[in-house]
Image (cartoon, rainbow, N blue to C red; front, side, top):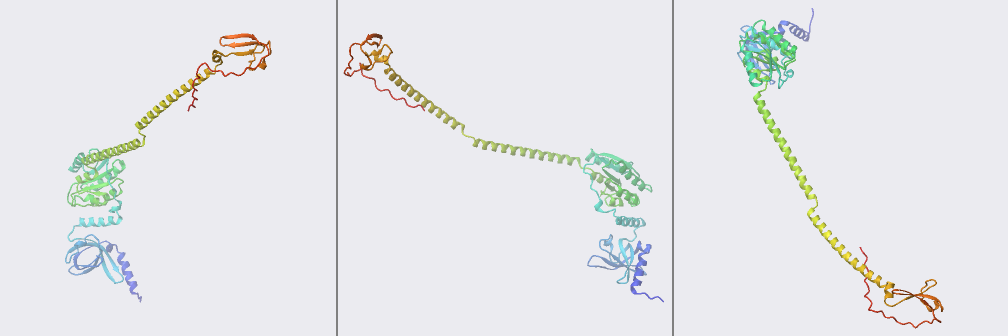
Length: 419
């Protein structure tokens, strides 16, 4: 007989429960009872029917937590798990729906859970939309009013963009495959800057193509940003969750992908006004700067009028000084001329004096000892010469003071040195 420890039994139970595919993806209908919340916000309760009770755990943040009310009838999705430390078997609930939810809604929630686990709904992978798209791709039916609504919105808001329609059915069994193919075709063409996936409102069955996995995968794989505009504001499809941006209606999707031309015009006008104001302000500041520099330069320059007056005064002083010195020089020259004239020998001869020279050699006789009796002489007077012969022995005459014929002139002034 084999004997097992408690740990071996609990481990076997956990392994058995975790390995059962039925218990790993389980939908259960029941009534909420014994509800309590932990300090961390997790919910502990039981699901019961008329015969049995199932212990349940629902962690904080799981969808449908708000439906957990005592006595509420719900449909819960989750997996069975064995908690070894306490030896309890628990139903780990990850989704709660109101009881009576149809099979289609359950399938939708099951697909949401699976795609969410794969990361198709992650906000971090969603891309921003181009601000000024040149080409906008539209995936919708060409026959419905949706495409015309999108055209009208874009024609009014942003007529610069080109619309490229990828026609497809938006309802019926073949619609999902056609929608996915239209998205892939726009990516192959690689012309569109953004894609709108749209259709009008309808029931869950009518909107079902936008909840199918093939459409979700096509949107997720698109290299071009995708905006979903499916149904009305209250309709949320899987396509909305995967798309880079969700719009509540097709017309709202058209408004999201393109800017409003009127707002752009107003913005451009405001930018132009600000640029003009900034440019004029810069010009004015530069003009004031130049004017300030000009004033500083003017203050730094000498006063030309003062310098002109000083130059005129210097010129006048120099002229007067030069005239005075020229007159003084002229007076000195006149005095020198007079003195030179007074020293002229011819003037002395004209006053009655004469010059005696020896005829043999022209030597001027200034003493009696220079001449012997019979020596030929020449006597020069004012108007010519007189030949003569020396007589007997020559005796020096007593000096006689000669008086000039007239009063001598006053002494000429000494000429001053010119500066």
